[in-house]
Image 1 (spheres, rainbow, N blue to C red):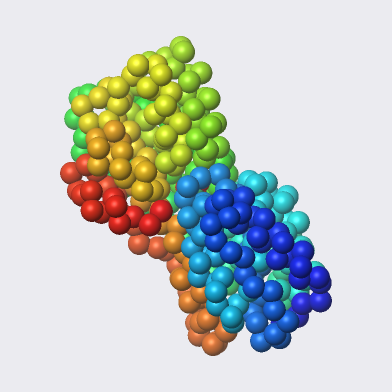
Image 2: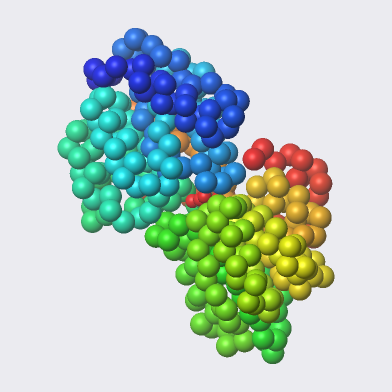
Length: 330
Ligand code: AHR
């Protein structure tokens, strides 16, 4: 362990972050002076969605009560500069390992070079980074976001006859984030293949419920001719559903607007089960145990694959039960 900075600050930041994200429902890692404790600095990009809260909880639950590890978490509040500051602080503190859930793909070359020069191994988690040299990080564990998008468009292809014109309202998350880039690519590629599909508008929803509610409410003041809502995460979907309700536009099974959403959190699955959302494409946030396994493999000198994808599916009213919804952890 190579720490020399005041650990109390880190513990406080970790605790404050977790409290802010989850109402103090779980505890920060224990402070210790044991030199055998392995210290992990985690730069979490934000707390914008239910998915993100579940992701942070999974990380915290995995490491919090483990005496061999100390996890220090920083919430970047969706600002890449905040991530740079946190990572530089982790370098100064001399942590043993760094995990980064990056806001956007671009802009990481310099900071990852600094981490590399400091000799600290890095895992990129959830989204990806675009850097010249992949050796700057150990591995990238996350979702196959393009596959998720393709699952969505394949479902839509089955739903829509070739002679039926459809108008698609597209809600986008953080521009430049892997989740946005790949889910958008899947839709745009499909629209280019189907002359009867039209994206009527691409609205920026920031992966948050509040922003989506605002932009969809504004949009519906002038336009109500929508057949499909393609929403790049569940929280934006919830905001859009509220806007649709207020505009008196029906959605879901038998409604005017078919809703496609990404994440498949418990709340979205319940709506899907109840027929209010047509398709939930899963994005699994429970990375904690997999990340720990990767770190342990690294420490034991075992080979680490450059990319690790998590298993994911898609759900409709037809293929989920209430028991399945009830069993969802997040
Ligand atoms: O990168 C994963 C995406 O980020 C999830 O779909 C979304 O909910 C989160 O904010």
